[in-house]
Amino acid sequence: MLPDRIEALLSDDDLAFTPTGGSASRMPDVLAGDGRGLALAEKALDALDYHRVDGTNRWRLVRRLS
Image (tube, rainbow, N blue to C red; front, side, top):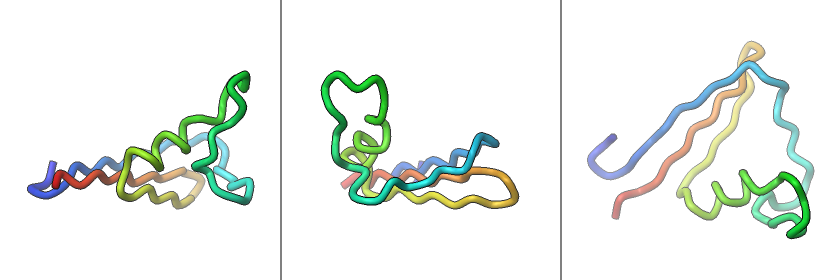
């Protein structure tokens, strides 16, 4: 934790994330079985970054404290 924010760095070796176009912050239909994770993260975080490096997905999540 930093003095002004909480920052998390996550990585996984799953398939590459492919944006579907449009805003990820649109919630899917209430009966959809998935698809809410990015929408919820975008609403709760101040920054959400994604990069694919050497076969690894790398995510940076930031929430400011003030």
